[in-house]
Image (cartoon, one colour):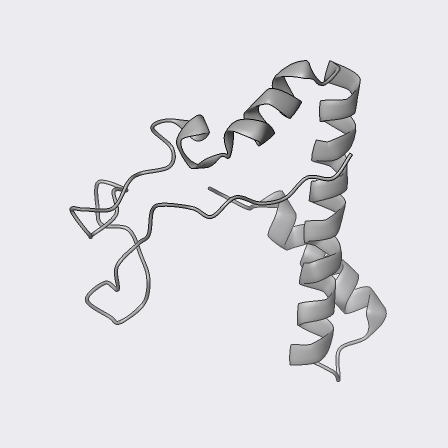
Amino acid sequence: MKLCVAETRWSISPGPNGLNAPNDNNEPNDPNAINALNDPNDHMHPEQIRIFKAMEPEKKLKLAQMLYDSARELKTASLKARYPEWSEEKIKDRVREIFLYART
């Protein structure tokens, strides 16, 4: 089975400091943007929706774990590139801390 990411139809406009950040209400700053949290199916391709609805719960859990593991690997690689002087142990600890206190 091959899954692909459908093009999203929402965006967050630059905030007052020039960064892409939501406003105080956690809504996109662009009034024309769609808040993806309102309807998770809104930014998914119909084929993706069909595949996920037909998928066994165990497979969904395995995919979620794979996504989580990939995110940790990407964060580890990012920290290694940004801080080449850090030891493996320090990077490992920092990744653990980042994911422990992560917020969405």
